[in-house]
Length: 241
Image 1 (cartoon, one colour):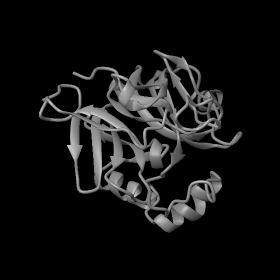
Image 2 (cartoon, helix red, strand yellow):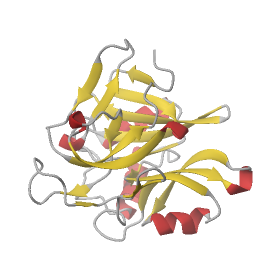
Image 3 (cartoon, helix red, strand yellow):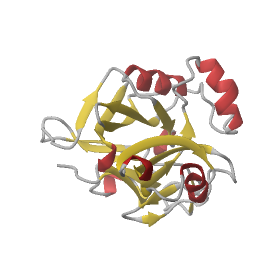
């Protein structure tokens, strides 16, 4: 069994569960099957030359203390959308924490949380706002306010990728999940809530929904390479042992 993560399979999702201290993000501009990382696909991107060619630009926030800035302001312009932030909290003796907020850019994240923290990673997508109990209320408020309606229908059945955060004791864990078959975004919300996550984001989906990880038998590598397309970035495990 791996020490730093658990590979989990449920009826509807494959999930990598790992401490937030063990995830970051980096640009790959390739299919997830072409890299040695374990993780899931990241945020949205522009690929005008077709999905078989490297994407031309990121449309979601992407930043890592290891790999630097490889993202942009959030998708389709300066829109405030769901972003996972991993940081060492200046006001809590630099305790490592994971949070999710709605932000337009890296600068906006720092303006909201403060410049004194030690930031480790920022991963942009769309807010799942798990604190809102009703899926319909979430759709009519957060999903609509982030201007996803008409661009990325929440009810459409397609492959999905999502990232949830869960506090357990003194540790915050990341749930990196891809769907088993076609699911709605409501299924992502329901799944992460069932796992006890306090909040979550959705990442790119459809043929971009990808995962690579060594499964729990410590022998077989599970790879979901989507439809083979090249994606912009990956949410990757720092230590995959």
